[in-house]
Length: 100
Image 1 (cartoon, rainbow, N blue to C red):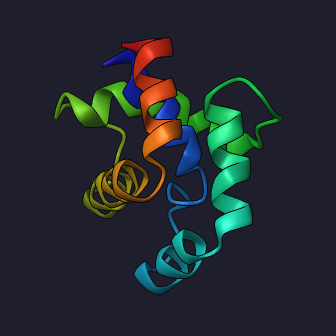
Image 2 (image 1 turned 120 degrees about the vertical axis):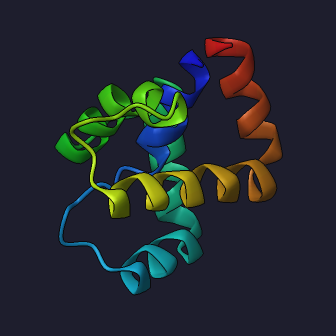
Image 3 (image 1 turned 90 degrees about the vertical axis):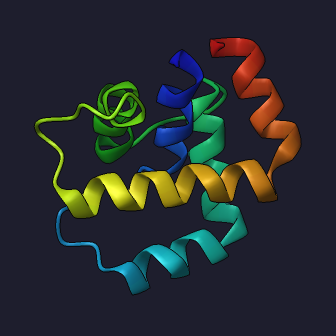
């Protein structure tokens, strides 16, 4: 489950309470932004404040128990994790090795 913490920092843009699903989709489609978030998750690059919050909430969301997360935040975080698994398989493998 620890690797999920890392993935969520990839999704750092997701956890903003005001982020719409459309904004999330645009962020996921922006490869440089996603690579920056993945580097943050792997400890290979800087993280913004949202990324830090996501790192904290990731394990909770993945365990299905994040009392401070809204339904939208939980759904968007899960969407982001699935996206990273499909579109960044090498990075996903590094995350699993590092935090699994």
